Amino acid sequence: MHGGALVSLADTAVVMAIKSLLPQGTHFATISMEIKFLYPVKQGVVTARAEVIHREGRTIDGRATLYNEEGRCVLEFCSVFKIARDKTIKEINVKGS
Image (tube, rainbow, N blue to C red):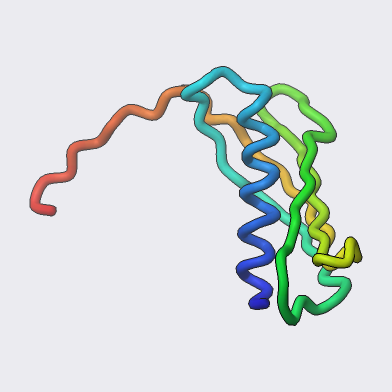
């Protein structure tokens, strides 16, 4: 499996963990990440388990671990997210598009 697809799964899993803790409509973004590829995924289903490990102010640290069908750890992912100052981003109307 392509490494970028695995990273996307891990990032999305952490996002879902964060969303479960914040008010609906809160906007936040990944500002850094560290990835450790541990074992190749050649086929099958990949499972992600994620958690929020620390929150201070507008900064949230998360972690995800990805497993192959045999339960072997294939990727470790740590990331930092930042909550937007204005928690609800205003819609921008772009002309000419």
